[in-house]
Image (cartoon, rainbow, N blue to C red):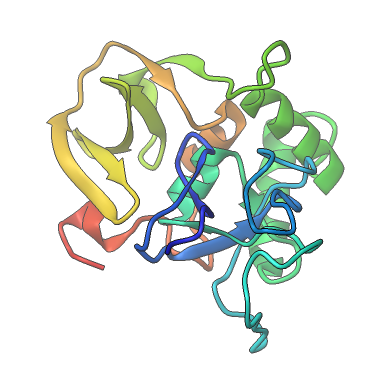
Length: 210
């Protein structure tokens, strides 16, 4: 049975057998039986390489350990509110911090970044997911929006519906108001032409099966 550790663009955790291209964590979210009990345990939400230094864990969701999370691609991880890991993606992390520092006052250190992203992804009243208003024609490729109550990737002149296994139904990209899923600060990073050591987009975004 699939574990409940696949992350949607909205940051929710679902069970699905499809394999993602990006790994990450946000602390220990599960109990000793492997059941998900919370949405996060720390403000440090990171996105990692699937493989690093040959490290392996024989069993996932071990008691007292962090919850291993998997994302379809980095665009999904960014939409959920994760940023590059400082260990397994050191070069990405440094470059990300430099971009961030050029976009915001206060520098590009991990604590500053994580605090702002937490504010942008969590509603202070409900503690649920915080969404933002935007105009679709102003968003860079790689952003995620909520259209017809479903997460869609912005790519070229289209909106691609997200699924755990890849991108499906395509719609024409309109120019009007929309509901933005990707935290605004990460949209600005995407606007700089962000690419890193992990795949930004799953092959299905370009019509290829992964």
